[in-house]
Length: 200
Ligand code: SF4
Image (cartoon, rainbow, N blue to C red):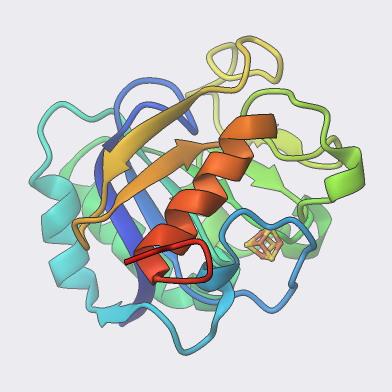
């Protein structure tokens, strides 16, 4: 079983081509400025088994890959590896994974065999440099296969965001926001949570 924060069937940010977006629930870091702190709660989200999630991913036509973020995907590494193995056995999908761990901390982990590219390290607000694909300059894009080499590089394009509907029928902002768009992403998050700024 995996504890999921949200899924989006088709995203056009956080990697090239059309992709399936999977955000896992649970992270223990509490980085100041984290764009999705509610994804950090260890008891939040919902539980889904690998077969259900695999079916959901495989039902989306014409996607090139999956982007996995969180939360911290490595807290559920075993189940995530099982899911990715199951999906990639049936369809040639590329995998981009965001983690708060550094590559050195997870090097050799079996989950990395199911990933084509890793964006590593926690978000550091003071090091936010506005470049594409990552939140802060400590985060590295590490190619684990040749699949995305030359197709995703930092700075190749500016940060981009999209509005998308999740599996919970909520409209969220997907991508790495900055400035006003980061404020708007927080506003949307509070709106759906009915928080202080979410007047509903
Ligand atoms: S590691 Fe990522 S998900 Fe976890 S608190 Fe930091 S920015 Fe948020």
